[in-house]
Image (tube, rainbow, N blue to C red; front, side, top):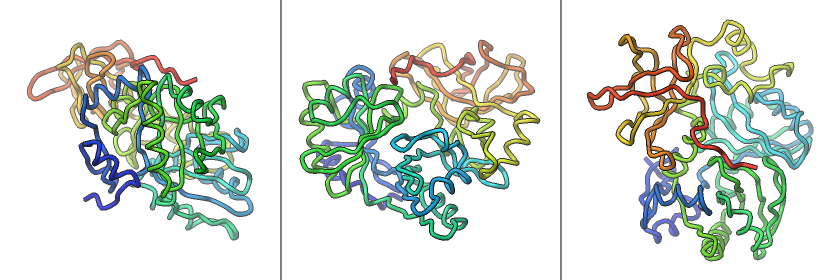
Length: 368
């Protein structure tokens, strides 16, 4: 049951949003006036403005904070400089399964800001707190900050008009101010488009949201819900924790080994993941693409090969507003020998729908 509200909740209600539970938060799925398809198109062609304040926020601070994060989370924080961000994974030390995927913002050697997924924030914080060395504190700041994502090819124009920095590199961030509100402008996002995420004080989120929507009108900006965020990320082949990554789905299986610092001396799950990597994971996450708009895979559907054998399971699936066909991600058994270009089928309400195994992204990304 959703018992937590975004600082922008009343704005969503005022815009006629359809609301639903996301990790215990009541968040907008879509708004009136076109819904998911129109919001998706706005992000691909102009600007979509998302409330993602349900995302977690946690501060790791104290002498050696960055070194501690680097010794626990999967990616190699030593590869980036202060002012940069990094996608990383919190894995279970015993199994290598994924507790959560998150973004780490490196402020300095003694200060790291983490953004986990909403439902997993408490567990990530708990695990970090249990093993924290003396002097290093981990603080859950979930409701100290709101997060507003401004995504799309005209996002830089909109932010520049507001006097905000826009020319920093992808996965970098800068401090700024908007109408007296201090905020952080991050070159991050979950859509595949050029865009930004603004981390703002909780009580100032409404002011920033209103300004973005008002000034964004001339750039074709519109409020976008988490329904469009899901279709956009699926078109990119970006994994969603709880579906494509989980305690049962390791980074090796999800083909997320690029977010693992294999050469680091330690991180949670290193032994288990190294062993699995060497022996080769029994299943791999792959993209699947249907032939038409009726062939839409959904999580939990079984993959069947040409001989009628069950060879995998769909983890994410949706209708692609850009391609006008069904697309998805699925765990495919390695022993099946199936790979890119091969044909499989999924059972959709008693109908066998043909799918081709393809390499994501399904749509060319424009992140730059």
